[in-house]
Amino acid sequence: MSVDDVEAVMAVIEAARVALTEAELRPARPTSSAQVEAHRVSHARFVERDGPGAWVATDGDRVVGVAESVRRGSFWGLSMLFVHPEFQGRGVGGQLLEAASSYAAGASQRMIESSPDPRAMRRYFLAGLAMHPGAELDGRPDRRGIPPSLPGRESDETDLDLVASVEAHLGRSRTEDVAFVLKDDRCRLDVVDTGPGRGWMVSRPDRLLMLGATDERTAAALMWRHLAGCEEETQAYGLTAAQQWAFTVAYEARLSVRVTGALFVDGMAVPGPWLPSGWYF
Ligand SMILES: CC(C)(COP(=O)(O)OP(=O)(O)OC[C@H]1O[C@@H](n2cnc3c(N)ncnc32)[C@H](O)[C@@H]1OP(=O)(O)O)[C@@H](O)C(=O)NCCC(=O)NCCS
Figure 1: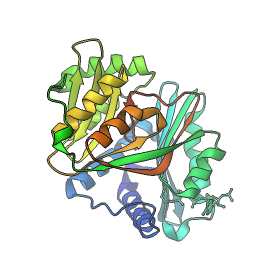
Figure 2: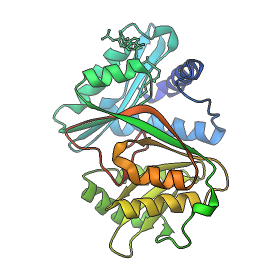
Figure 3: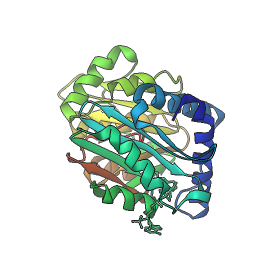
Figure 4: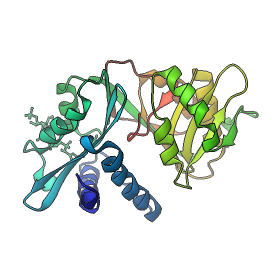
């Protein structure tokens, strides 16, 4: 993939998402123009930061599929695998996954947050990753459930050291991705750094994007901080049975919990006080 492919890649992803919605595998979710712009910048970053993990499939001059992945030390994560609906079911996705997997050579940990597309989940399981069925949350939080006092504060890039130390505690490595995501001024960082637990969270009003904490109590407090700031609908994805603390918060806040997709991991357990963004793990 090159930076010049970004527009074509975005068109493939959009067409594949529409088909998923039509197949009732994904709710219709409108994308704002700010979100489209953020995606454009993010796809280009895969080429610039993780070039060996970013591949397109072509039919002649036409881009018909994409795989984008990240490598952070001994960790590899697949962030994107999409094939245009006209080319699905012909082995293109399998070839793209194989190409992106070359970037995983020597990695001891692998992770993929999968959509509920059965073709995707088959590919990931056959690639040797363990399947952890997933769930997502959405809705407008019931403000009556919000605890009266919550630890933590809103922060910014000056707290990336805290992010790094919590990531090290979790065996994760998202600090540079957090720094990148925070360049989008719709995103904010919250941290908890007083008391026994430490943690951080990146969120936008419409979505809790990523979270890491030393313990479940701190993770739950961070999620409550997010919900306390939400006047409208919000979402969180990528939950598994390892995140019972998040289901507790979700049900107390009267959010909807939908079982969908799966998290695939290899060489590691699913971290508990943690949420992935789908792009960054
Ligand atoms: C997921 C996706 C990338 C796979 O690409 P693809 O080119 O369609 O996949 P392939 O043809 O390489 O492989 C599909 C596999 O699923 C199998 N399959 C097809 N339909 C299936 C079904 N309904 N249930 C289970 N397996 C199915 C195929 O037989 C094939 O397996 P095999 O090669 O072992 O026989 C593509 O379908 C897609 O873009 N889906 C929508 C977007 C999406 O959800 N992406 C995943 C994001 S994490």
